[in-house]
Amino acid sequence: MDIYRNINELRSSVNAWKKQNLRIGFVPTMGFLHTGHLALIDAIKPKCDKLIVSIFVNPKQFGPGEDIERYPRNFERDQQSIEAHHADAIFYPAVEEMYPDDYYTYVQVEELGAVLCGRSRPTHFRGVTTVVTKLFMATKCDIAVFGQKDYQQALIIQQMIKDLNFDIEVMICPTLREEDGLAMSSRNSYLSEEERQRAVCLYRALKRAEDLYANGEKHAALLREEMKNEVLTVPEIRIDYLEVVDALTLQSIDIIERKTLLAGAIWLGKARLIDNIVIDVEPIDA
Ligand code: AMP
Image 1: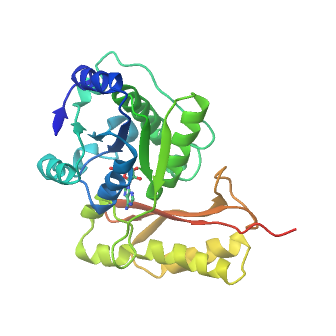
Image 2: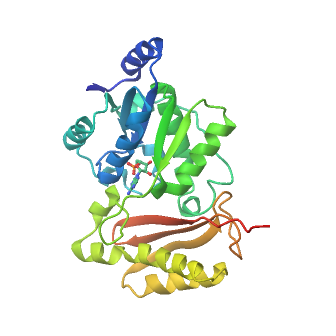
């Protein structure tokens, strides 16, 4: 497995693969890999001939005060995991390689990036779409995979691909969870043991709303209230949002009639945790 630290070196391998008509798959990550990341690698592997995994903690998606320095890293361990899952290459650029001093260009998807996580992290998705565009250009990938755990991110990237006519197929993989239901996340490493026990309340709240819907409740306001009550039973949690939105537009809804996203973000100690559940509404027979 090759490790590339600069774009030109990666590109020369990629160009050679392209000449052989090989299909390139791509898994973007910020490293500190867990089973959720590895599931993305396993899912895309059969769909491509060459597989590139990137590890880059992207400063453009961290806001002021979000403390990028603290983000967990362990390149050696990541390298071993990626190799064990049979990727062909790791792209592991330094910040200066991606953003030299004279870097000025940004890619921004409007509307979808302004709600949910975009409210409390106003420059976050612009950072994500900018880096993903650069990574798409560097890897020349034919197919890329993202996790449903970051539903809004995946939706925004799909919108960007459509709007900018990128010829890239996207796969979305389900959220991998710990045994108690907590969504796996590199940020879970910020949690103390006690916080770790409490953290599952976000998933419990989403599940509660999903169960209420399954039992016939269609009023979004009631589901929001119930999610809030569930989370507020747990001490020292701060709610960023607990929302019921249209799964395609991410706009708040009153009544659940179409595919719906239950989504939440909470603060617990030093960690901001997000999670979501999609409600697929059965079409009503005519
Ligand atoms: P990150 O390293 O957090 O930027 O995540 C890299 C990719 O892994 C993104 O597409 C995430 O949505 C995905 N991912 C993160 N956590 C999970 C999880 N628990 N299950 C599935 N995919 C995940």
